[in-house]
Image 1: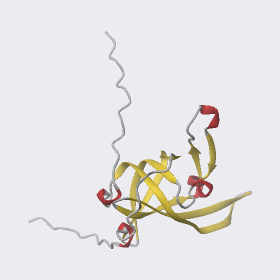
Image 2: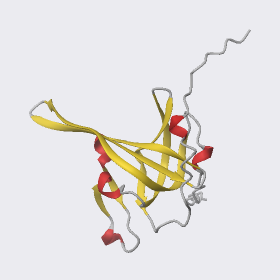
Image 3: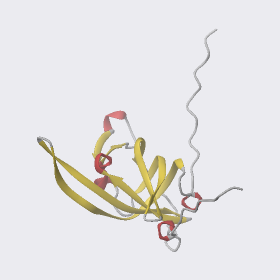
Length: 156
């Protein structure tokens, strides 16, 4: 008898204040507070000139805020609109991440940059624009301003 395939499991949504260094697999609904292109330059890479892009967006929910970082090829994410699959298309992330836009970040992870947390989505994750959320972003709890230090514990 053949085994039945396990169905897709429902996502467990995380709040921003529950994020911790070194964790991954988060699904969050957040509002964009601000966005900016941090670095954009061309670099010679063989016969073609390849663009290098880094964008940072401050995103948050009713529990806090964190910096979301997108790098290089992440500038093109699947844009999943509400509606039929014909509306699904690739679009530049910076075009999606406008202030007051509500997005769902799927399979997001926490990267550490200079001792502080940054939220990121790799090639296995997704950014989806969704209906505007009713919450107000808690701007006095920015998790990216908390500085962490890696401490090695010697067990005796």
